Length: 81
Image (tube, one colour):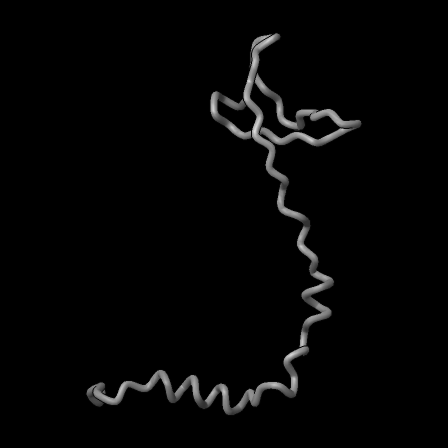
């Protein structure tokens, strides 16, 4: 049950807010309402459609070599085995 200063979910139906969550408030209580939209559903289709769109723009082998090269630290002591 929500308490003072809590967030409850609601949906708009015919121009009115209908609470989805149960609230424990006395009849006739006045409350302040702040409206924020819920995050839209994730569009996995857009993610799938973008797959491979960078192909041909990046030399993957060179990118990997550069990453490994950049990870090297020139002043690192050789490990003793």
